[in-house]
Image (cartoon, rainbow, N blue to C red; front, side):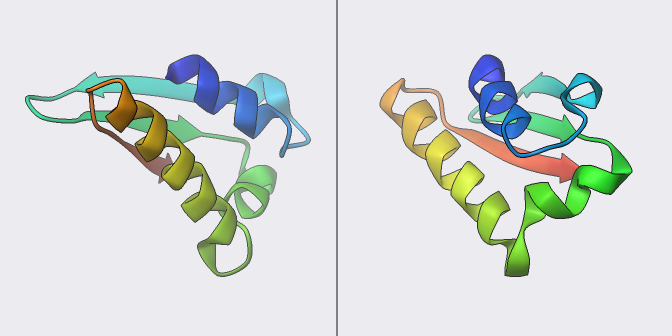
Length: 76
């Protein structure tokens, strides 16, 4: 999942070397914290959060299919 998030976000940002994804395992869900360069934050969130919503939808679909629900948090 971590690789999937990195792959999707690298295509959106200008500074792909500053992408950081941290995995935090919980009892029922795994949380992924995404950090990008400050100037790329708007590109990852998108207008009205549409890009972030799409990223979360893809992550949710793939993780649920694998049997390990996950959520994505974008850290400023």
